[in-house]
Image (cartoon, rainbow, N blue to C red; front, side):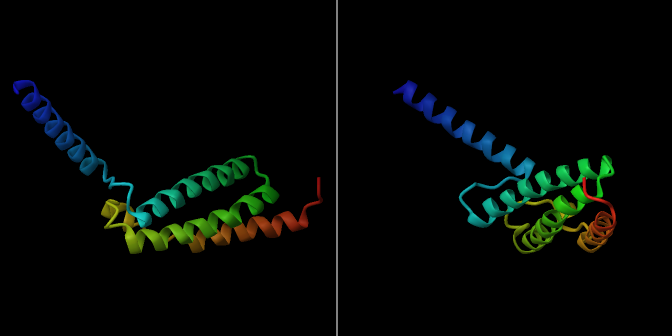
Length: 122
């Protein structure tokens, strides 16, 4: 009987610790489909950001144009999802409150596309 009580107490303490660590990181249970979608959009955004940044670092305008268009679309979707579902999914207010830079990034990608059109193909 004492072992059962000790195991139950250990399980309760472990669940409290897990709940507190989830609250500190801002994560929520993965059961909410909107939070899963938000996480998926963030992963896509990071992948496209890295590809676009690498192309910009190489000064490859054609590659910035190719990778930048999906990046801008994902960024716009992510901004909308953060505004709509960020609080429910535990996204910190500082992240939700960031200014929408989609227009400025779109202008940079558009400029790269114009430059790429004027360069000869490799």
